Image (tube, rainbow over all chains, first blue to last red; front, top):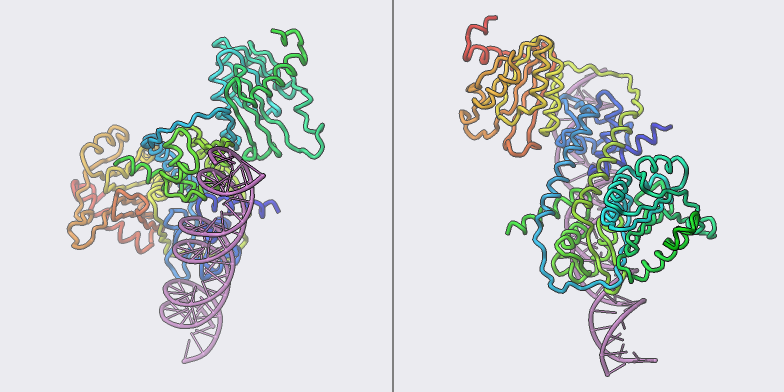
Length: 274
Length: 274
DNA sequence: AGTATTGTGATTAACTGGGTGAATTGCTAT
DNA sequence: ATAGCAATTCACCCAGTTAATCACAATACT
């Protein structure tokens, strides 16, 4: 039965990569055959036979399928690796062109640079949040406090950034979820202070009906914070974050107080005063 | 005015990468501003003000835009690099998932393995054709004749494959369009016989009204051929090819005769007999 | 020739996305 | 407070696209 799932997933992915439903289904059907006619494809996919021809024609023009002009026509896919590489190169070139053309867009001159007082921004998506996290870490000048509610939040990239931060003299305090990561972190970033975070306000179970987990907490130089949460840690796209800047920012003030007191007093009250 | 073109291209590319028109336009507009409100975005894009909100919301969920929840709401894009990386990773994961799920699709058991007598297949797209070319080169056991109607047809990958072919004892004959490539080829694949192809049947100008150029010609072990052509060498997607297998295949027979006689007798009649 | 199968084209139905305006919300200035 | 204005959301319509079906021509097979 897992094959069924594979089939569904293949179709889904192909559609996300720009193919139409019939094209995706025809391609997957054809992938399961050494070669096939319109009838055979129609039989094992749910594509009306009369529409297989259109679909295959498009696939052929994308270079994913070969056509043998006999009667009945025979079709077959190029190898999976070829097909995937074709799709990949298509997107790689698009992405690179995009980077270039975005880079030299002409700035639009709306002179009113509305100053934002309480700078609190919302963003979502694991990738975006991680990128922002790394950027903030690199901005740190004096102190950096970070709590990872979940081990997979501490990627190699972030650890590298933490390392760089300690190297330029930033005080780094990191909370992690369990021992294993604690040890690797101590290895990688020896100057950092690492602890196991068991902070009560991290624990969602204390709040009834709230399945939201806190993923990341970041406090940079006591003036910039980033907090992210998610309902389902397995779906990075659902991660949501707010981040705020400015010592006098309301959000920053609250979180700063929570983190600095709660955190520094937790397992080493001595440092809280410092 | 080049900026206008950049703007157009950015919008186009973003749409190809899966964004809707309004989303793409909003993103590009916002990219030209340090930050902006719905009104500002609507002014410099052609997105109705009331639809900016939908669009931005989607962009935010993709991690491309940050939202400042004030009134009026402020929006801003993440940095270009972040944005591009997010899009890239999105597609990289999709491609990789696709490769996996395609790889273990269950083969469909249509027992009738219809044997194909005159195996002549059509395929299009520069990438697909090049991949097939390389694969055929790697199949060669005894003799390999290749003519590139155009210098850009001889990529590094192909040259590498040719090299490998000579190393396993395959006789390699390559025709190229001009001296410069000839020299680099001789360097890279010393055992190959390289010549400048000025074959009359390669020259489209001899045929009135036919703008089609021959791109590649490939003859493997005198039993497999690949021929590709294009109307416009600058648009790789328009390249079309046929390839055929089997010593007794009609197409193969004809092309084999054309190539072997016409080619080998052209600048060195001595070898034609051999 | 007759019948089944294959291929092409046209036609209809369903859906998606662009475009527009009304209803709601929130702020500001009487 | 409340009228007025801007900002925001919501709901709807229209057009283009795509899915789905049908009718018919072309081809092979008996």
